[in-house]
Amino acid sequence: QLGGTVTGYFFDSGHDVAKGEKLVKLDTSVEEADLADNKATLNQTILDYERQSKLVKTGAVSQAILDQTIAKRDSAAASVQHVEAIIAQKTITAPFAGRLGLRHVERGQYVSPGQALVWLQALDPIWVDFPVPEATVGKFKIGSVIELSADAYPGQLFKGKVEAFDAKLSQDARMLMVRARVPNPDRKLLPGMFANVAVLASGAK
Image (cartoon, rainbow, N blue to C red; front, side):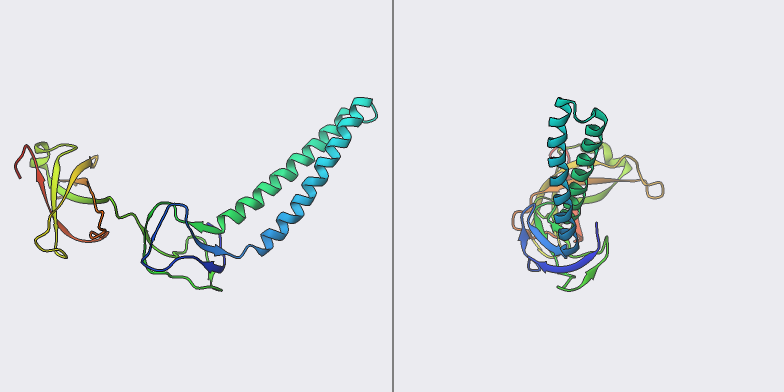
């Protein structure tokens, strides 16, 4: 979400990671300095608020002065939260559990917002999308069992279940895209692989 200089990475290419695991850290030295300054300001506004609150009760200070002090305190607190959010965004963590691809970043490198650092793929389960002719759509339903074979593993079948249908057919080929969920505990199937799919409808292919 933010640009910055890479100060460290905490993963190896091709490794599995858990959700929330730290992957890359960008330089936050400027933000850390701003945060310290904003926290000092916040502490001062809190002290001012406490002092003004006591004076209002004795009538030595008007409510308007206290309201201004409250506004300054709240503004200082918002500034602290803003900088803390920026610092958090500069620590990139895994949004979900999966397997990492090849690392595309080095320490000291400047990265821009949106730049790819490393691919992360959820592999278990894995989803397979395949087209079905319009004439056969009615022969199966959500929960129908599929069998999948991949060229990378000749003679081996992987089983899954139909999970969802697309909302419309393609206008040219009159095909409906179907999505199935396939358990992949051994992580053999990878995103981008081509496969042959057989749908078992009413006990028959």
